[in-house]
Length: 201
Image 1: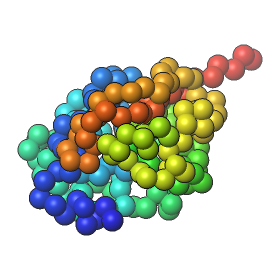
Image 2 (image 1 turned 180 degrees about the horizontal axis):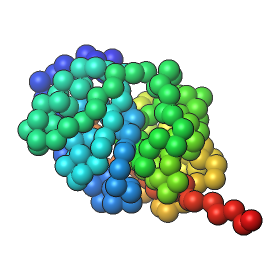
Image 3 (image 1 turned 90 degrees about the horizontal axis):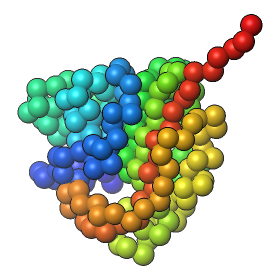
Image 4 (image 1 turned 30 degrees about the vertical axis):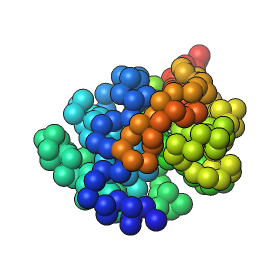
Protein backbone atom coordinates (compact mmCIF):
# COMPACT_ATOMS: atom_id res chain seq x y z
CA UNK A 1 0.00 0.00 0.00
CA UNK A 2 2.52 2.60 1.13
CA UNK A 3 5.11 1.68 -1.49
CA UNK A 4 2.58 2.55 -4.18
CA UNK A 5 1.42 5.71 -2.42
CA UNK A 6 4.94 7.07 -2.00
CA UNK A 7 5.61 6.64 -5.73
CA UNK A 8 3.47 9.70 -6.37
CA UNK A 9 5.60 12.65 -7.45
CA UNK A 10 4.31 14.87 -4.65
CA UNK A 11 5.19 14.32 -1.00
CA UNK A 12 1.84 13.00 0.18
CA UNK A 13 2.43 14.16 3.77
CA UNK A 14 4.34 17.26 2.73
CA UNK A 15 7.97 18.18 3.34
CA UNK A 16 7.57 20.18 6.57
CA UNK A 17 8.00 18.40 9.90
CA UNK A 18 5.06 17.37 12.02
CA UNK A 19 3.95 20.37 14.10
CA UNK A 20 4.07 18.55 17.43
CA UNK A 21 7.57 17.26 16.74
CA UNK A 22 8.73 20.71 15.63
CA UNK A 23 7.56 22.16 18.93
CA UNK A 24 8.83 19.39 21.20
CA UNK A 25 11.97 17.94 19.56
CA UNK A 26 14.26 19.72 22.03
CA UNK A 27 13.19 17.16 24.65
CA UNK A 28 15.54 14.79 22.82
CA UNK A 29 19.12 14.73 24.13
CA UNK A 30 21.66 15.39 21.41
CA UNK A 31 22.75 12.11 19.87
CA UNK A 32 21.25 9.14 18.06
CA UNK A 33 17.57 9.13 17.13
CA UNK A 34 15.37 6.44 15.60
CA UNK A 35 12.28 7.38 13.59
CA UNK A 36 9.66 4.63 13.31
CA UNK A 37 7.57 4.48 10.14
CA UNK A 38 9.36 7.52 8.73
CA UNK A 39 7.69 7.48 5.34
CA UNK A 40 9.01 10.17 3.00
CA UNK A 41 11.62 11.56 5.36
CA UNK A 42 10.24 14.92 6.45
CA UNK A 43 10.71 14.39 10.18
CA UNK A 44 14.08 12.66 9.94
CA UNK A 45 15.45 15.42 7.72
CA UNK A 46 14.15 18.09 10.09
CA UNK A 47 15.92 16.45 13.03
CA UNK A 48 19.12 16.01 11.04
CA UNK A 49 19.14 19.76 10.32
CA UNK A 50 19.17 20.27 14.09
CA UNK A 51 22.30 18.19 14.58
CA UNK A 52 20.88 14.78 15.42
CA UNK A 53 22.18 11.52 13.97
CA UNK A 54 18.99 9.98 12.60
CA UNK A 55 18.13 6.45 11.54
CA UNK A 56 14.82 6.27 9.68
CA UNK A 57 13.08 2.92 9.35
CA UNK A 58 10.08 2.09 7.17
CA UNK A 59 8.68 -0.93 5.34
CA UNK A 60 8.13 1.12 2.17
CA UNK A 61 11.42 1.71 0.39
CA UNK A 62 9.91 4.10 -2.16
CA UNK A 63 9.45 6.75 0.52
CA UNK A 64 13.18 6.84 1.13
CA UNK A 65 13.88 7.79 -2.49
CA UNK A 66 11.99 11.01 -1.79
CA UNK A 67 13.50 11.27 1.67
CA UNK A 68 17.00 11.16 0.24
CA UNK A 69 16.15 13.97 -2.20
CA UNK A 70 14.83 16.03 0.71
CA UNK A 71 17.97 15.33 2.75
CA UNK A 72 20.19 16.37 -0.14
CA UNK A 73 18.21 19.58 -0.57
CA UNK A 74 18.85 20.37 3.10
CA UNK A 75 22.47 19.18 2.91
CA UNK A 76 22.11 16.65 5.71
CA UNK A 77 22.60 12.90 6.03
CA UNK A 78 20.00 10.37 7.23
CA UNK A 79 20.54 6.62 7.60
CA UNK A 80 17.60 5.03 5.75
CA UNK A 81 16.74 1.46 6.77
CA UNK A 82 14.17 -0.55 4.82
CA UNK A 83 12.60 -2.96 7.32
CA UNK A 84 9.30 -4.30 8.61
CA UNK A 85 8.76 -3.44 12.28
CA UNK A 86 7.58 -7.02 12.82
CA UNK A 87 11.19 -8.08 12.32
CA UNK A 88 13.20 -4.98 13.19
CA UNK A 89 15.33 -5.03 16.36
CA UNK A 90 15.45 -1.69 18.16
CA UNK A 91 18.46 -2.85 20.17
CA UNK A 92 19.31 -2.35 23.85
CA UNK A 93 20.18 1.10 25.22
CA UNK A 94 20.91 2.13 21.64
CA UNK A 95 19.03 5.42 21.21
CA UNK A 96 18.95 8.85 22.82
CA UNK A 97 15.51 9.32 21.35
CA UNK A 98 12.82 7.44 19.45
CA UNK A 99 9.95 9.09 17.59
CA UNK A 100 6.70 7.69 16.29
CA UNK A 101 4.72 10.16 14.22
CA UNK A 102 1.43 8.76 12.91
CA UNK A 103 2.98 5.28 12.89
CA UNK A 104 -0.23 3.31 13.45
CA UNK A 105 0.25 -0.40 14.11
CA UNK A 106 -1.99 -3.37 14.95
CA UNK A 107 -2.35 -3.76 18.75
CA UNK A 108 0.04 -6.66 19.33
CA UNK A 109 2.76 -5.20 17.12
CA UNK A 110 2.26 -1.78 18.69
CA UNK A 111 2.79 -3.19 22.17
CA UNK A 112 5.85 -5.15 21.03
CA UNK A 113 7.45 -2.13 19.37
CA UNK A 114 6.68 0.21 22.28
CA UNK A 115 8.07 -2.21 24.87
CA UNK A 116 11.10 -2.63 22.64
CA UNK A 117 11.50 1.14 22.68
CA UNK A 118 11.60 1.15 26.49
CA UNK A 119 14.59 -1.20 26.43
CA UNK A 120 16.17 0.50 23.42
CA UNK A 121 16.37 3.95 25.01
CA UNK A 122 19.54 4.97 26.76
CA UNK A 123 19.33 6.52 30.24
CA UNK A 124 17.73 9.98 29.86
CA UNK A 125 16.47 8.92 26.44
CA UNK A 126 13.10 10.24 25.26
CA UNK A 127 10.21 8.69 23.36
CA UNK A 128 7.96 11.09 21.44
CA UNK A 129 4.68 10.15 19.76
CA UNK A 130 1.80 11.74 17.96
CA UNK A 131 -0.97 9.55 16.58
CA UNK A 132 -4.66 9.74 15.92
CA UNK A 133 -7.01 8.96 18.82
CA UNK A 134 -10.15 6.77 18.60
CA UNK A 135 -12.40 9.80 18.12
CA UNK A 136 -10.56 10.55 14.86
CA UNK A 137 -12.94 8.14 13.12
CA UNK A 138 -15.62 10.85 13.39
CA UNK A 139 -13.43 13.48 11.72
CA UNK A 140 -12.51 11.80 8.45
CA UNK A 141 -9.41 13.94 7.98
CA UNK A 142 -6.78 11.18 7.91
CA UNK A 143 -5.57 8.08 9.65
CA UNK A 144 -6.66 4.43 9.86
CA UNK A 145 -10.29 3.46 9.48
CA UNK A 146 -9.95 0.67 12.04
CA UNK A 147 -10.57 1.37 15.72
CA UNK A 148 -8.02 -1.31 16.62
CA UNK A 149 -5.31 0.89 15.09
CA UNK A 150 -6.35 3.89 17.19
CA UNK A 151 -5.41 3.29 20.84
CA UNK A 152 -6.56 5.52 23.66
CA UNK A 153 -4.08 7.62 25.60
CA UNK A 154 -4.43 5.24 28.55
CA UNK A 155 -3.63 2.24 26.37
CA UNK A 156 -0.56 4.00 24.99
CA UNK A 157 0.74 4.85 28.43
CA UNK A 158 0.43 1.22 29.49
CA UNK A 159 2.82 0.31 26.65
CA UNK A 160 5.75 2.09 28.34
CA UNK A 161 6.38 0.69 31.84
CA UNK A 162 8.91 2.63 33.86
CA UNK A 163 9.11 5.73 31.70
CA UNK A 164 8.44 9.16 33.22
CA UNK A 165 5.59 11.11 31.63
CA UNK A 166 6.72 14.57 30.55
CA UNK A 167 3.68 15.24 28.37
CA UNK A 168 0.54 13.21 27.69
CA UNK A 169 -2.69 14.50 26.25
CA UNK A 170 -5.49 13.89 23.80
CA UNK A 171 -6.37 17.09 21.97
CA UNK A 172 -8.29 18.39 19.01
CA UNK A 173 -6.00 20.26 16.65
CA UNK A 174 -5.62 21.15 13.01
CA UNK A 175 -3.37 18.64 11.23
CA UNK A 176 -2.66 19.67 7.65
CA UNK A 177 0.25 17.70 6.22
CA UNK A 178 0.20 17.13 2.48
CA UNK A 179 -2.93 15.54 1.03
CA UNK A 180 -3.38 12.69 3.52
CA UNK A 181 -3.79 14.73 6.74
CA UNK A 182 -6.27 17.41 5.88
CA UNK A 183 -7.74 19.35 8.79
CA UNK A 184 -9.25 19.29 12.24
CA UNK A 185 -8.35 16.06 14.03
CA UNK A 186 -8.22 14.30 17.39
CA UNK A 187 -4.73 13.18 18.35
CA UNK A 188 -2.78 11.62 21.20
CA UNK A 189 0.57 13.17 22.12
CA UNK A 190 3.25 11.68 24.35
CA UNK A 191 6.71 12.67 25.53
CA UNK A 192 8.23 10.06 27.86
CA UNK A 193 11.67 9.87 29.46
CA UNK A 194 13.81 6.97 30.64
CA UNK A 195 15.26 8.32 33.84
CA UNK A 196 18.58 7.30 35.32
CA UNK A 197 18.00 5.06 38.34
CA UNK A 198 20.47 5.68 41.14
CA UNK A 199 21.42 2.70 43.31
CA UNK A 200 22.47 3.31 46.90
CA UNK A 201 25.38 1.15 48.04
